[in-house]
Image (spheres, rainbow, N blue to C red):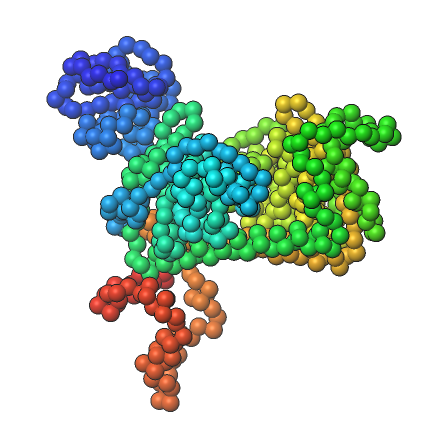
Length: 581
């Protein structure tokens, strides 16, 4: 509880020191983030403090606008313009709140907490996604929620074009729901914004993933240990109310990006199915006992392979080896020079120098798998030049997690090339004649995952080393089969890259419009075939412009015409002035 007094007096709330002015008539409150407690501090002495503490004077009338939120970081960010609103104010654009009675969305919501009761199959259950998986390039369900025993199941279901926002832990991750997520239940740790308008949903996603949106969301979060954000905080997030033509253009880019990722994931599923068909390998879940079931296995001393752990000799791994022994073609190891030219464990990268802006993105082993990770650390270029050959990512390199969560596999898309990743992901560089897509497909399959994880050691934090990765078995069918499987993966990787570039195009254009920066000329503007106006001559035999317009408009579907602003004819000059060039 906070009490105000007529004299200078300390008021503290969880690391926040609020120093009231000695003259109440001024109606000002001085905010500063100070962790230690002391007696009253005169305002003049605050400038003499040696520690880099940010402080400012805040009017009580300004404090009331934020419902008297006594959070120094939040209030100072607003006062000093660090909350993403300064450029928005300077842009001159009309702004609307994200949600509320006058917002883009009427309301934001998330389901109440509930007991998770899982079942074995989708016959009696619904695929369930945790918030950590929602923002993954290839989301994986954590199990099936019971249809019968889950209360208010409908509120958990994802609908197409939902805008989904992580509300605790890593606040501000944003996902646009596409067909791949529809029909799945989602954790209560995610806020939902629901609309049937794909273009609005895409536009909102672009803004929330821009630096202006992320700053506002991060500053709206509360709690010191685990940050949280609530639906009511979204009412304070302001978004430019751009003209429909621009909103639609940005929204479509974001929607197309989501559809491209869906297509990429379908290709990866096809590659996995084709792998099992071409190699004549049944899925392990159909022939091996459940891993969580109690089991015992008898093996000969000659089969110990120097490992005495029961986890290494589990029945699923033995079933996988048995199936591989039945194959009619060669089975070798991942360390074979015909399979990989290098398995690169990061061993020399130690001391790190970070910068706030610019630099080289350094992804954690978790962020490698995310669509658009937040809070990415950046390495100083000059300080890490010698480290780049070891830690830099390359297109179509395979990254496999080697500690903590073992065995997650990623093939690096083109946009991540020249970024870096931490030592917790071991790199696999395919041999010259080995299709990297096939190598990925095998390591990401149920067989690859089983053979990787069986090698893990450690009681608290599991680890797998380079030699263990090298010993993993891999079938070596003829090259045409490897390419048939691998090319599906490579195509999926290209689609992921295109999706990323679509999103960055939309976000960059939006940020440039807010900052009043010129946009990059379109490909049409740069075309060498574009004829200068002075070189155009009159052709009396040409089709009249109104006939040409009628021919073109006849090809446009009715649903597209419905998106044209209703006042276009009255405000044509206005909309014409919004053209990107």
